[in-house]
Length: 69
Picture 1 (cartoon, one colour):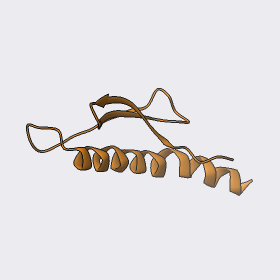
Picture 2 (tube, helix red, strand yellow; picture 1 turned 120 degrees about the vertical axis):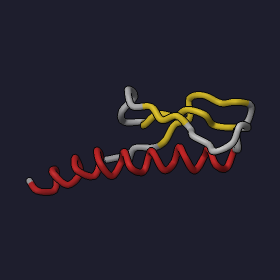
Picture 3 (spheres, one colour; picture 1 turned 90 degrees about the horizontal axis):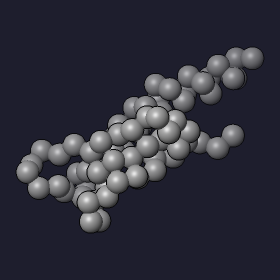
Picture 4 (cartoon, one colour; picture 1 turned 120 degrees about the horizontal axis):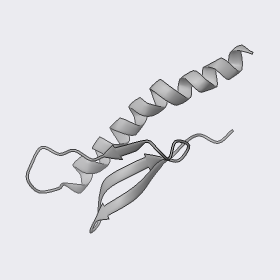
């Protein structure tokens, strides 16, 4: 089975500002930054971090339950 991926759905020029889980289209992640101006690297890290937490909470449990039988 394919692992879910982070799919960027909104951009501000070359800066990712919103993304979705490829397996959970209703789940969206909005980039968060600390300054007034968007920072590409900071926003990428923010989206990836939110996605990683989502995968750990949602997809690892589904995968683990399949292994149990």
